[in-house]
Amino acid sequence: MKRIRVYISGVVQGVFFRAATRRAAADLNLTGWVRNTEDGRVEAVFEGEDGEIDKMLAWCKIGPPAAKVENITTAEEHYTGGFHGFSIKHI
Image: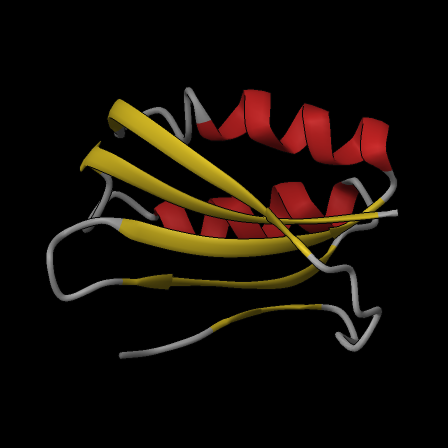
Protein backbone atom coordinates (compact mmCIF):
# COMPACT_ATOMS: atom_id res chain seq x y z
CA MET A 1 0.00 0.00 0.00
CA LYS A 2 1.17 3.50 -0.79
CA ARG A 3 0.36 7.14 -0.08
CA ILE A 4 1.25 9.90 -2.55
CA ARG A 5 0.76 13.67 -2.36
CA VAL A 6 0.44 15.30 -5.79
CA TYR A 7 0.55 18.92 -6.95
CA ILE A 8 -0.73 19.58 -10.46
CA SER A 9 -0.22 22.88 -12.25
CA GLY A 10 -1.43 24.36 -15.53
CA VAL A 11 -5.02 25.00 -16.53
CA VAL A 12 -6.43 22.85 -13.73
CA GLN A 13 -8.96 25.04 -11.93
CA GLY A 14 -12.39 25.76 -13.38
CA VAL A 15 -12.22 22.69 -15.64
CA PHE A 16 -13.85 20.10 -13.31
CA PHE A 17 -10.46 18.66 -12.37
CA ARG A 18 -11.48 17.90 -8.78
CA ALA A 19 -14.71 16.14 -9.74
CA ALA A 20 -12.98 14.11 -12.44
CA THR A 21 -10.19 13.21 -10.00
CA ARG A 22 -12.74 11.98 -7.46
CA ARG A 23 -14.37 9.75 -10.10
CA ALA A 24 -11.04 8.39 -11.35
CA ALA A 25 -9.82 7.69 -7.81
CA ALA A 26 -13.07 5.92 -6.90
CA ASP A 27 -12.85 3.80 -10.07
CA LEU A 28 -9.38 2.70 -8.91
CA ASN A 29 -10.53 2.04 -5.31
CA LEU A 30 -8.23 4.76 -3.97
CA THR A 31 -8.95 6.83 -0.89
CA GLY A 32 -7.90 10.37 -0.03
CA TRP A 33 -8.86 13.86 -1.12
CA VAL A 34 -8.38 16.57 -3.76
CA ARG A 35 -8.58 20.37 -3.51
CA ASN A 36 -7.74 23.58 -5.33
CA THR A 37 -4.90 25.61 -3.84
CA GLU A 38 -4.76 29.38 -3.54
CA ASP A 39 -1.84 29.53 -5.99
CA GLY A 40 -3.89 27.98 -8.84
CA ARG A 41 -2.74 24.38 -8.55
CA VAL A 42 -4.63 21.24 -7.60
CA GLU A 43 -3.38 19.21 -4.64
CA ALA A 44 -4.38 15.61 -3.97
CA VAL A 45 -3.50 12.80 -1.60
CA PHE A 46 -4.06 9.23 -2.76
CA GLU A 47 -3.82 6.01 -0.76
CA GLY A 48 -4.13 2.52 -2.15
CA GLU A 49 -2.45 -0.31 -4.01
CA ASP A 50 0.84 0.57 -5.71
CA GLY A 51 -0.38 -0.31 -9.21
CA GLU A 52 -3.58 1.69 -8.81
CA ILE A 53 -1.62 4.71 -7.54
CA ASP A 54 0.58 4.47 -10.65
CA LYS A 55 -2.54 4.47 -12.87
CA MET A 56 -3.88 7.52 -11.01
CA LEU A 57 -0.61 9.40 -11.45
CA ALA A 58 -0.71 8.66 -15.19
CA TRP A 59 -4.28 10.04 -15.28
CA CYS A 60 -3.20 13.18 -13.37
CA LYS A 61 -0.62 13.95 -16.07
CA ILE A 62 -3.52 14.37 -18.52
CA GLY A 63 -6.57 15.20 -16.39
CA PRO A 64 -10.08 15.83 -17.72
CA PRO A 65 -10.61 17.02 -21.34
CA ALA A 66 -10.70 20.78 -20.58
CA ALA A 67 -7.51 20.70 -18.48
CA LYS A 68 -4.01 21.48 -19.69
CA VAL A 69 -1.57 19.92 -17.26
CA GLU A 70 1.83 21.60 -17.40
CA ASN A 71 3.59 20.05 -14.41
CA ILE A 72 3.04 17.43 -11.77
CA THR A 73 5.11 16.94 -8.62
CA THR A 74 4.76 14.02 -6.27
CA ALA A 75 5.96 13.10 -2.81
CA GLU A 76 5.56 9.70 -1.22
CA GLU A 77 4.33 9.87 2.37
CA HIS A 78 3.74 7.36 5.15
CA TYR A 79 0.66 5.24 4.41
CA THR A 80 -1.95 5.64 7.15
CA GLY A 81 -5.07 3.89 5.89
CA GLY A 82 -7.06 6.58 7.65
CA PHE A 83 -9.28 7.75 4.79
CA HIS A 84 -12.81 6.51 4.16
CA GLY A 85 -13.50 7.05 0.47
CA PHE A 86 -12.31 9.93 -1.68
CA SER A 87 -13.49 13.50 -1.12
CA ILE A 88 -13.22 17.00 -2.51
CA LYS A 89 -11.90 19.53 0.01
CA HIS A 90 -12.54 23.23 -0.25
CA ILE A 91 -10.06 25.99 0.55
